[in-house]
Image (cartoon, rainbow, N blue to C red; front, top):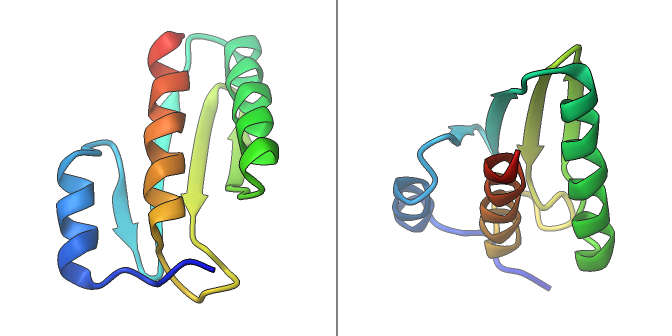
Length: 96
């Protein structure tokens, strides 16, 4: 069980995740990759991480543009799980 973060903690975390923005009870990032193939590689790697952590992002794929949305639905908001997964997603994207 993860606790929903307060506004101050979310703002602090987003200060370290400059590509992410708060969107209601979630955080969101858009990433444009060089090709559709690269975008799918990112999705596949993020899927592996999400399965290992049992914490799954919402992912929208539009050609080479990916949109990730994170929220801990079972808790009704943003938790440390979302912050941690956002950082891991950033790492995957940076590797491309």
